[in-house]
Every structure is written in structure tokens, then in C-alpha cells.
Length: 306
Image (cartoon, rainbow, N blue to C red; front, side):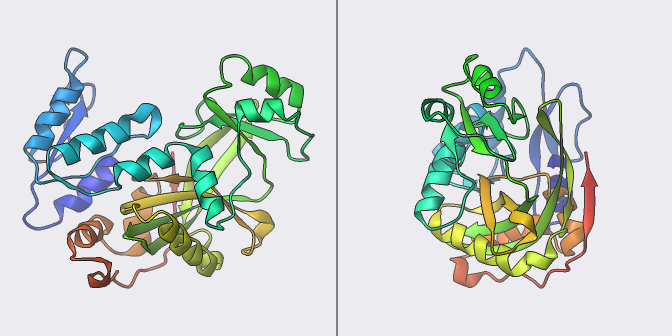
């Protein structure tokens, strides 16, 4: 994701790039990259880079509040944030709260319980089984799928009652959408199919097919607009994970919102034919959403694998 973003930003005139990189990796092709070693105070490194910048585009997970803390730091230093506000990042960091807010706005979501609430309600068996995952997690880390309610309950009671959520497993297609957002408006970039398989009681994410769900473009477009209206502080690039139930566009259910770059960004340039990073900068520096228009996009189908 970082390299794909830097490549697009490097193509924009009058933009000089600063970033950081792990000491075990090669320095990226930018004007300056701060190497971070185990002995460094990484937060001081990031603060120094932010102070030298006019605008900041963060690549960080919501997990453990990292993205939120960085976002607050950018705003505290008075810099242009090319991303979502702290309030919506804090919301999206909780899958449970995201589901609650979207459901209240009439947007279908996969039913979601806190682990503690699920254990207290004596759940019934579900034909597709149950999925438990960290409320603030990213990817498939510490996620399990089980048909055995007792086995799931035992696993949750091993220190996960306060950190995990539980959702019924859905039998549809795992998908995502990529969009740009600002002030309650959305511009759909792509309709994606995720490459996910299950094994050993968990899930493995292998990438996705950008525009692999184009047959549902109209439904994805409407969903993007509904989410943007419900969460008007979404800004810049945003990803949404969802399920298309049994191939039926009338049955879309949201799993979570990612208020940051997602893996799909890697294939978006080839899929759309436009420099998406440049469009984000245009959007975020425009006087308002009425002064922004997304160029006509190609709808190429592109597979990315991890």
C-alpha cells in the first residue's frame, strides 16, 4: 500500500515526499525517509516528519488506537489531514459501534454482539456457524469460525470477553468497496470481491479482485452514498467490507468500515485508469464537495494477491 501510494504521489507536480521506513527494509524512492530502528522513539520520529510537512497521509491500523493517535497528532500540529477525522476513526475502530450507528441509519449490517452479550444470551445454533473477532482488529488476526457454540464460548472465555465481538457466519460473497468521501458525499471507485478462505477454524485473506463485483455497481453506489450520509466525517479514501448475500444485490450487509487505505488501493490505478492519490488531494483541498468532480473511471478487472 505504501509503495503504491508513494508512486502516485511522486507523479504529482510540486509535491515533495517525506516518510519513514523500518530499518530492515530499503528506503523508498522519496525526497527523504527517516529510518526507524528499535532504539528510536518512533512517535518522536513521526512528530518531526509531521512538523516538516504541509499535508499528511497516514497509513496505520485502527488497532490499539494507533491511527487515532496519529490523526490527533497531525491536527494538533496544524497540518492538512488527507484522511478521516478523529471522531469517525474512533467509531470505525469498533465494529460493534459501527454496526449500531449504521443500523440506526437504516443501513443493513451483519448482526453483531459483544462477546459478553453473546455469551449471556444463550445463543441458538446457526446453520453457517459463528465468527468471533477482535472489536478493533484489522485483517483476520485472532479470528475464529465455529459451528460448536460450546467451543466458541470456551474460546471467548479465555480472556476475550471484553475485546471480541461475535457475528453469525454469512453464506454470501465477501466483498469490499473503495470510495472517496467528504462532508456526507461519496464517490465510488471500485466494487471488489475479496479472496478469503477458511481453515483450522479461522480465515486467511489472500487479496482481492478489483471490480470483481461490477454486476452490483448500482447497489454498491447507493450503499456508498448511504454510508457517507450516515458518517459525514468520513474523508479521503475509505474502504467498506460487506457481504453480498447469496448473489442478491438487494441483500447487502456491512461488516466494517476502514477509514484509511486498504489493500484494494494497490490495484486501483490499473483498474480505474486514474491517479487516485491525486484525486484525494483535489477533493481534500477543494472549497467543498460541490467543487469536486471525479474523472471518468475505467472499470478494468484486476486481481491482486498477497
